[in-house]
Amino acid sequence: MNPSAAAARPIAEAEEPHAYDTAFFGHPRGLSTLFFTEMWERFSYYGMRALLILFMTAAPAAGGLGYDATSAGAVYGLYTFGVYALALPGGWVADRLVGQRRAVLYGGILIALGHYSLAIPSVTTFYLGLLLIVLGTGLLKPNISAIVGDLYAETGARRDAGFSIFYMGINVGAFFGPLVCSWLGEPREGVTWVNWHYGFAAAGIGMTLALIQYVAGQRYLHGAGELKEDSGLPHRLTAARRQFGAGVAAVVVFATVVAWLSIGGILPVTLFAESVFYAVTVLFVVYFAVVIFVVARNGVERSRLTVCFLLSLGAAMFWSGFEQAGSALNLFARDLTDRAIFDTEITAGALQSVNPILIILLAPVVGMTWVRLGQRNPSMATKFGLGLVLLAAGFLVMAWASLSLAAGKVGMRWLVATYFFHTVGELCLSPVGLSSMTKLAPGRLVGQMMGTWFMGAAIGNLVAGLVTRFLPETETIEAAMQNGVQLFATVAVVTGAAGLLFIACSRPIRRMQAGVN
Image (cartoon, rainbow, N blue to C red; front, side, top):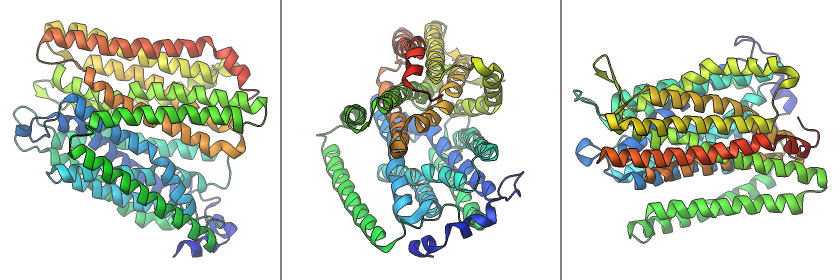
């Protein structure tokens, strides 16, 4: 069915079959399709991410690329930045050209091809694979969540519960992905059959399973995720295709120039990553300045949009620390952590599964805590502050672990404790963040504010890659101790201070919310 034909179907007809569907544990049957699609996609994403920086920094003799931590961190940061940043154009493509349902399908195909490209031992296929995964995730990630919402005609508790079930799929996939992919791909003492590319291939197989069951279960989605009627009008489709073509051409030219400069040694990847960080950060601040001082129509809007800016800034700081799980903390797990259990060495990547299992275990506890607090439930600013303070506590644990390196490698309990603090911090900050942005933003700017939230996450991921230059050196214990304490203590001080500032200013920020709770 072409996009215009799909859009021509009356909306009422599309909603009727699934409006009160309760076939999947009281929810629409289509939720099961999206649950398993997202589960396998997150399996592939986090499984590959657990290997990424380890593969880049591994010696060529061990099958790796032999990059230093600084260069590998820059590539990692640019990759994870792209995954979040492309959610904006990915949403645009779905809204204007193909609809969410096809965007998820096309995105999944690109992701699978990307993982299989990584499974081929070549530098060219490595970077091609990263590019394909970035493009595919930009299409899939924002639009599959939109389809979940589209399954429900109502907007009450059943819809909220549906999203909770959907997010459980995210964490189930994120738990198993690192375990399986690192077991297959990460070298370890006494095991000769493993290969980095087996792990990347496993991620591709996971994404293939996602596609198979998504295609098989699309009939249960009924009209959810189809291109909307107004976007499917011929003149709008023609204009959107023209804009899309111009955008693709501009990106291709830009990527070609950057690749040529990088290959020629004129623009090293670290310098390019830093340039992207400064450019995007400046644009981020300038955008909010224009929105607050020019676009806002009155004092109430101006005040609420200022809170949106503060929340986006706090989120960027939080993710810059939290996402070091896949970069700096992953390298710490490999090089400076004793990972033996009963004389069996587990993989460094396996520790990436600690956060999702803690999310599964602790999310109900944190949720019930907020409910039981009732009227004493902390404000959004206080919850943001708590999230940042708990992030800082985790990095203080890592600074303490670095001091303990005097006795050799440290135990895994240090990283587990760090991930515990970071997980509770995530549960304080992340759920309230996007919800608050949608409540605070004027109706005409809600989409843009959601975009700034994802852009804050993108900036944070880029920073998380760049900080690997300050990692503990393993050449001497003294250098490892000094660099580790300096890096982790600095992150703890900065994020902790920001968190305390949010808590101290919670009352003024609440007044700036102008009635939004």
